[in-house]
Image (cartoon, rainbow, N blue to C red; front, side, top):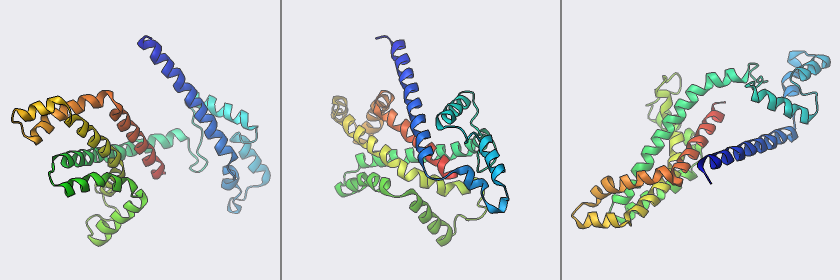
Length: 261
């Protein structure tokens, strides 16, 4: 099978998966109790009559059958029209354009710090000769991944902002205000990356070229940094490590966007 056939098949499969996910998501949203339009416009403070509320439902296309709503939504999406936000009252594209740059910046900074922490944990656990300290470092990823993100954020604010008073809570500045959110995002994300790197380093250290380099007099740290790192980098390009890193970043980006809203 040629490369082009493989790429086309994967693309077609991706389209089918996306279509199936969109149908399931739309159905789940529809079967959930509550009506966003009624919740928004039936507020007595707004003073809208039932006829006006019915007009609003018609304007949003909520008065037609569900299958027509889905086809209408899918057609608008294919044309680049994401509709209007009932809560904000503005087009969704405007919300995305205004929130995407800061969300991407926060996600990139969190992912960069997570990568640094993961690499540090992986290499330190491989270099240290003390068994108890090595076991403690290798146990940190399991601890990090089990910490709830919301609890970690509150704990960091309590310690650094209220106890030490290093980072102000009100008007902290553009970059200072990113310190605690970046740490909050990086800690749980660094856990799976560190676990993957530790396993990969252990596998590389069992390769024959590592034994040959050690036999020639190279130190353990030198072999790890020079030879094992190059082999590990080449493996990451084609193995599941790169896929795991990509999935982790996408998950981080989605979680940051949902938390900002």
